[in-house]
Image (cartoon, rainbow, N blue to C red):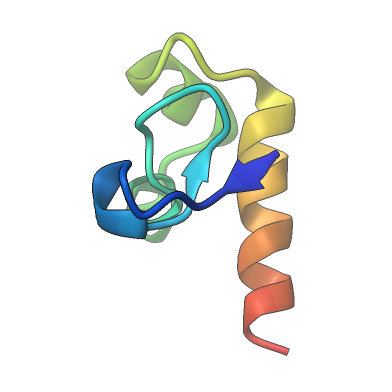
Length: 62
């Protein structure tokens, strides 16, 4: 789940329960990293979290 709180990471959208921003995960996607590599970079994330980020990004740009 993606959440935003003005008191966490300056209000940027993050993966709930973490301080990992949607932006950081999408930057890794843009760099060509696979889902597995992104999870390796952020071991506390699940593949579902990465999928949520990608869906959030898609919805945001519609």
